[in-house]
Image (cartoon, rainbow, N blue to C red):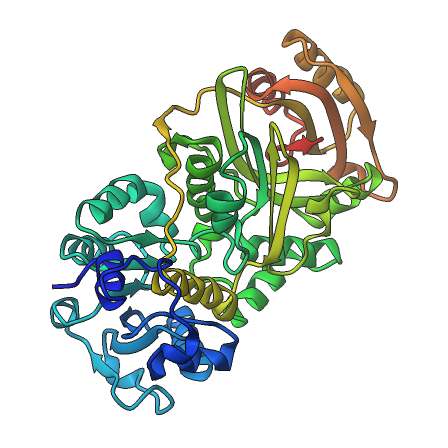
Length: 456
């Protein structure tokens, strides 16, 4: 059975909690003096023994950092993976135990389980078993943390361990540590972010002129997208990450299923052309706020002003904008996809445990996503042209008290497949949905109109 990190460090420091006493580096054993290699002083006499669950893109990158950097206070002792022989490499420390027996690794004398397999099952069971036996857990599993994070944190605390998940949102961008430490004293009122590197890669390439299908294949070839990309392009990945940020930033516990995502798959090259005419581009944005005591949250492709920081995010970059009541706006930005950036966040969590760092306890309460954003919208139509189309659309919008802001039509398209855009003044999505039910029934409509929020 594992020993709680704080208890272990207290015991190894002569009965003092880490941070107490004035032991100099010269008085420390070799494990502590080795910290000079990284410019770090350490009072840790025995490194934390680490079991790595999952040796894929992120897991192998974590092992590589541990092998090359040899961070003070950390020792990789076990690697678990199904079919482990095909994963075995020769550059890990000689004493590492490679295993495909999860029970044996969970029962071994390790201090921290690093869960990088992902998903709810069996990963969730491994995490719970580790925490129940007093081990600490570091994970990048956003789906698990979004659904069970509060319960798992309580389980960790009850058994003397810790749960850290800095890599679960935005990869190597330290937004979770930033919320837990640097912004814990503020009252965050709004979140806006690009939380999925795959979608950002696809949309920023489409902005340059590529088509969706071609870019998706490129993303899959580079390892940014899965063979089935639904989790990413459908907005489900970003939704789970938004739920985690809402708990830490807005201090509300929500069921991620209540956040309705919109896929990026209906966005085409013509939408980027019209977006440019409107001084915008298109990005998948996750947003939430708690205005007037009501909670609103959504994920989907949105028009973003070209002067917004969100428009500057390209490739696999992630970006999170947080608006605080006292501190104002704060922006986190960096690489959000790929093994190495995510591994940096994982190793940073491990080092925090090794050096006795504890997260700030941020209170949160259950809440429901019930409010709507009242924002301008972009509506792109593809029609077989005839007289009276604009009048009929205008009438349907007027019945729901929605005002038109602009009508944009580019020249050069055939009349039997004519794309044009209507933008409307701020309105609730529910009102616009009623108007669109009437509009989409017009016989001139060739495809489902695309409705996107305009982020202002």
